[in-house]
Length: 200
Image 1: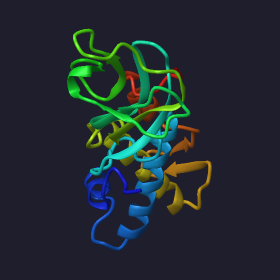
Image 2: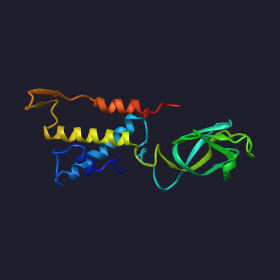
Image 3: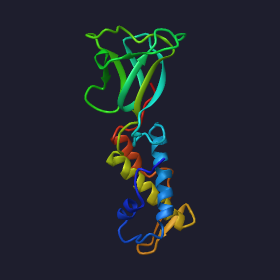
Image 4: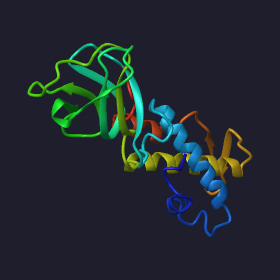
């Protein structure tokens, strides 16, 4: 996966600490790992905050109801449904057959049968619903996600300079700093932004 931030963005967040391109490779690696960490901490697939530009198909077990939960996506290309799991072909629903939910924001999480359309429900059964979409939480990483990645990557970089010791010293002020499991700023940002995904 591509990292949510670049080495230059990490360096810009630490003025006077890193300059030049000496550490660009390791900063890029740390940015990728920090991006994956944020994905996992918020309960999402790797790369969810930078949805793919190309739509791909995913299959879902039909709900048998007038609504259908799907994975988070930012754009739906086609919706196809088959009446039974033993059928071999899918019928394509047109945009007037269903409504996306939430109504006014991304990501899309659910499809609802449009009561003014020709369909009544999503047929139940294994893989009876096929959705082709651009999967992920957002088309581009939200600012709060980028900031969380910058903080984590920078923190790992500085710990690496100290051989990943649990305690570091600031000689200028005579203060000891203890490493924690997760930076409190990152935890605060994740909770405040409502990014932690809840299981359905």
